[in-house]
Length: 217
Image 1 (spheres, one colour):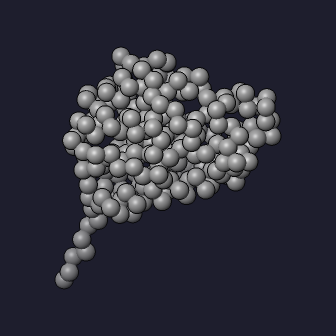
Image 2: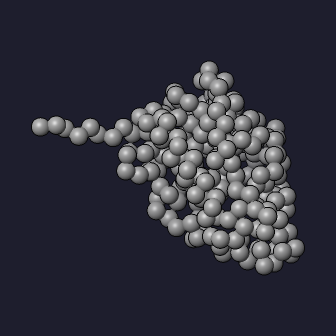
């Protein structure tokens, strides 16, 4: 009798980048390359040295500077290099990039209606639809599992990317309103058991109590 080997479990800690000035101003960043601000750098240090006690086999990052800066702090602690994975880049918000949602409501009311409704196929004229973005993110995390089966790894990305992964792991549809927080530099743990993605811990930010600039809610 031959026993079927049990699939290896892959653990992934997915971290949103540290704070930027545009986060504070509530400006939609998308593909705009905005660096961390002073608080964001402090958040990254707190995350790397006080919170992420696991040892990681590899550390990945979006190719945008705010994610790379955050990942580099963790990589230095681990003695690893950051591997850039473009599939982890934030969604391209087209005509909404660089403005706030409130500004978008006034400047582009039709686009804002699509934005609020989480229209799966609207691409902000020059950007990326939610459906296509989610497919890109799924390709990226599936690639990570194929290349790191049975390992523990970390990935630094963006709120939109985490939104997609959270919904995939919990079975929530993409078009429903977001009713969960995605804090900067919080730890979000997922595992893949060979069958699907599962959420283990969400928005762990106990390490950030001294560097938070806004209400935890």
